[in-house]
Image 1 (cartoon, one colour):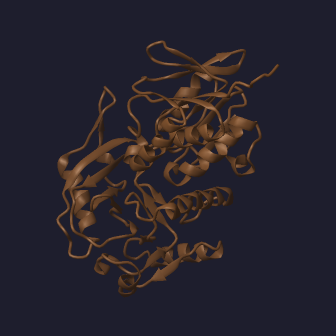
Image 2 (image 1 turned 30 degrees about the vertical axis):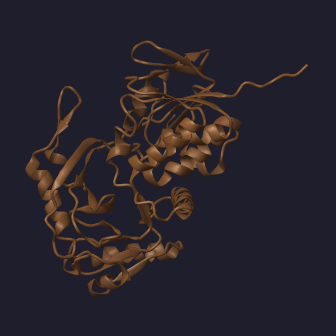
Length: 373
């Protein structure tokens, strides 16, 4: 007489990088996974992330260590195929506004003190380190972090979903706003807006800035500091830029197809949120961001916006990630962080391990949702 153990059933709310990554890691460990999206895959923050892979600047030691591990996982993926147009490691370049050279120097000193690869450059030194940058746009000095990179998250999600389907994952698109079902204080599955129920042994809520609202009916409060932001994709243009740039008026990264992805925060006051939940911004403001980006690129190419997406950028109230099981609702896990791109692969790996084994990973110890209780 033989017996078999049924696979652990996990339901995931959210079709962004955190939900998809965790789903694939769970499938690799033998779980039965159903992934539910409100609309499409990568339709929210994942589809409008600058997705700069880094741990630059100053943050808590546990957060830095987690981000460095996150970049490491991308390096492993990059090493498997360095020709992927959507994942590259050519460093990051940042500078502050004129008169703030001492701030830049202090950041460089801090990065060196924690062993983060950081080079302080004069404008005339930039061309020898990374091509395609207009050194005249740099007022005094800049920091180059050689170990940083970038990823196009929609392309990464598509890549991971191939494995998701190959391993038998189930995808439910356009499920609307889903909720966690509970029985006896324990998570038992997910219910869609249309009333469809999916039973599960564990649930992961990974729906970006909406995560706090999804767990609020469970009696769980997670402060939400998510601002409205925008990502602009340009039309193709000839250029030699390889590095990500973070500057006073524009954040810029190369993007597949000889295009650029543009971001910043100065235009937030020009964004209007409408009653139906949509957003708008004047076209001339979008073009202004493209013009600011053009000033950073050698030859000042005429950058034209091809598309732009606006929505909430997921940021927990205290700025630190929120990962792990809810103490009030066993079986319900959350993934909510500003650094979804950098942490996308490592978070999926560590969370899937916790879901499957019940063992809490020490790298997530300071990021538990219970810290807000």
